[in-house]
Image (tube, helix red, strand yellow):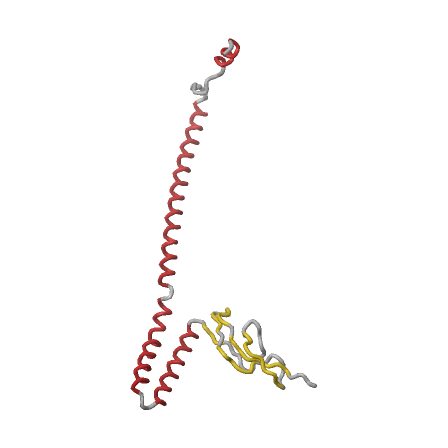
Length: 180
């Protein structure tokens, strides 16, 4: 290393030297107050962050619990219907009076329909209505004297859940006969 480089290196100010600043007592008190305020705000920030983290963890736990037990009410509503189905099954095996068995199954069907209505599931009206591609799935087409697109038969029911299509109804629709 040349002498010039050594001189330049030795003349550089050291970054680790402590510098002393002279300030008035008023400025010192102001700086001290600002530092205290900064410490207080930092403490509030840390506490707020911890509260936020705890709230987020609590919400995640509540969400998991909700998902785990959300269907409990639904299942409790289905249990009496299941019980009645099991009773009907026993009677079918021992049945001598099939009219009574049919009445029991009809009652279970009504009970099931009432349960579905209570939870917001509604059967889509089909037969006699105009075909609606948003609600109906045409499985069969039959030529007829009637207007195009009338629903002749329901092959499988469709359902709405709280106003949203759950499953379209599978239907047979008309196609007007072409005149020759």
